[in-house]
Image (cartoon, rainbow, N blue to C red; front, side, top):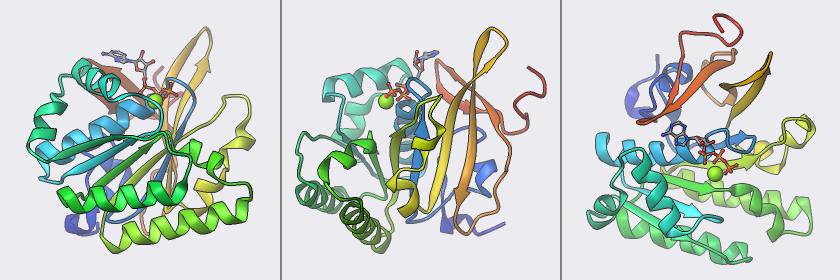
Length: 232
Ligand SMILES: Nc1ncnc2c1ncn2[C@@H]1O[C@H](COP(=O)(O)OP(=O)(O)OP(=O)(O)O)[C@@H](O)[C@H]1O
Ligand SMILES: [Mg+2]
């Protein structure tokens, strides 16, 4: 098992076990999932745990939800995010700029301010709107990834996938990402079952199975010891 100091522990129950201890420090990870699959819950818990349990300040760049909505989302799971903001352990930036360079500068500046070790961009799928050409997009996102790696900031970017169109899964973020996590609603008989899989994580021995996920009053949980389709 790698040294834990080389890993950013998500602290999400069951998650780090599937990643050989956590996300390699400084990696850029895409968290892809269908609507309502728990991407935002995952991101909030990742930053909250970082601030509360690992003394790692984090930044949440919201490209969709407002500041108030994010604070409210947090409250639902008992996270007092505004306390963390006051303690400079968390920054929430809501961005409506359709200019990638400005976004990159904002990220760089925010990281400096609180010496952030964790970054979330949610939903990152909006990146596509910044660019006309895919090559351009890849180059610029790669340069963002490089900058984040240099300062050892472990990043989660969310991406939306459609249950029916698995082809859209392999967007540009996945090509430039060090890791890809997938959140699914799988239809089993007459209901949806939440699950998570690790599609890739550079430099990490990963579980190749889909594991059930629950979302409850304390947040998201990955049932790492249980496989989907096993006991359901
Ligand atoms: N306390 C709770 N108990 C059970 N389920 C909850 C609780 N709070 C939220 N949920 C559910 O968690 C789900 C995941 O929400 P979340 O916003 O994280 O999904 P998402 O993948 O970010 O969705 P979107 O694509 O719309 O951004 C929602 O469907 C919501 O109903
Ligand atoms: Mg969301």
